[in-house]
Length: 421
Image (cartoon, rainbow, N blue to C red; front, top):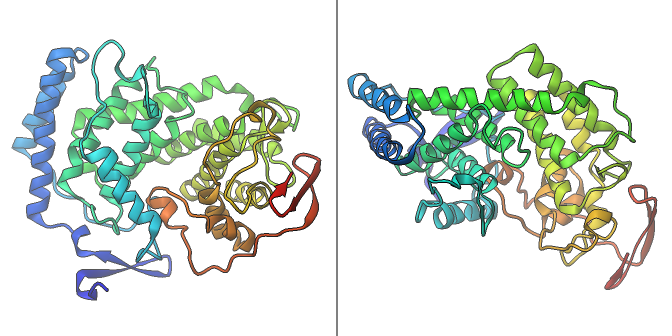
């Protein structure tokens, strides 16, 4: 048990949680962070001179000169419960523990996967699409660096890995860049930038800050041009890929929070209105017309709608997320296998995703014991998802020997021992 002398107390929206003293600034640690920024600038100057875009080396040298002559002051540590919700059950939280273990293993030791050359980030890697992998790493590093309850809050060790990924995306989100409108990474990148720019802006050199600000706006503008249908009346028969559209809406929501404009606000509202008719009566979502999205894609809908609601404060995306409530109790078996057969485009495909992370979010929003039993299968996630872990909520037992009507597939669902359909 940790002594309370190791923590300070912070009140957030009426809730009490503890901030580790490590998250509170010390001048020596701030100096180390700024030294890490200068070291990264030297690294990026050398890289730019070898293979980078024209002008990068000049901009980074100007940043370095500015930092040496007038180093920025540290941003005071503050709680931002909408960006980084407090983790009420941090002690013994398996999601939180797994987060730091995997961050160390997969990102920090060693920090890699930054090839510069003809392929750059466009190549496919063994871990999936490089853009999505790196975006996920960026968000996790940002949460670890900025969350007041993180054991790595403000750690100089994270500065270079963060800046490498920001520079990567600032380059690929320039006008005409390959990340623009890519529904996989674009919302994740915008979320990470919103958190970092709000909580720890002093570690981002001016030229990189300018590049990221421009990049997230380029992306939102590209999405608006790409999705004119968002501003048209939507019906259940309107073609929609919910898992793609919710991520694009999330990217616009983050950009609207950073740079509010009437155009972004209209696109955000239009995107949500376009998606809403494609939530089915028992919580499934549509994919290519009127059939069910696969189990894995559905998880994206839960995450993006809940996160959009938190960032914007809008009631609509939260109510849409709550309408997904019965999906996981209907499609997840006691062994943790999710049912894919009723998603025609994916009926041949199965994987190890058990839906527990998304079910934990739904259980937290609706206090649902049926989703809690799915959440209790265990899940991995980032620090935001760790805030939804709850070992105290009582879970409903797994039902057996039943037949029910599933309005998502307009047909029966049943389980009799090990046999289900």
